[in-house]
Length: 138
Image (cartoon, rainbow, N blue to C red; front, top):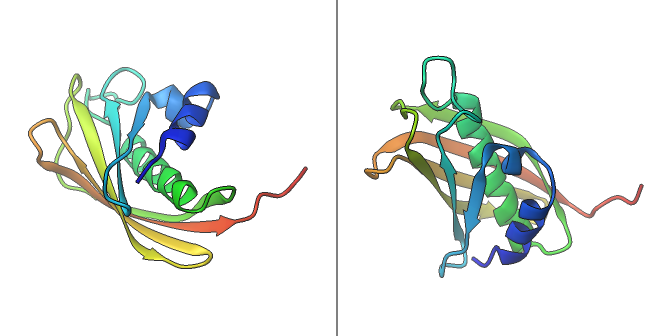
């Protein structure tokens, strides 16, 4: 999936993905994409591990980028995010989110996002549902 347009837009505008240091990567498969995020002061919790909320934010942003890449000109709004955190991710590493769309309807997209550590071990398994709509003019 080619996410270059969405990536350049997110890198040029202030927002959560930029604040937390997220990067989005295109893949050759039409139904997948990758996101990365370093575990640092921007997204750690007080015990020195990656915050579960930051992990869910990464997954939701990966799914949003993917839905917008699949539906150019539309907005993707996360309406449900559900995750299981199965392993702690210590400060200093990088997590990689592997996103795959499992349902692509006209207005609803369902994504499976597996977040893994540097060794390829599963950190969190997250499912995201996006509501895909036409942008509204203000």
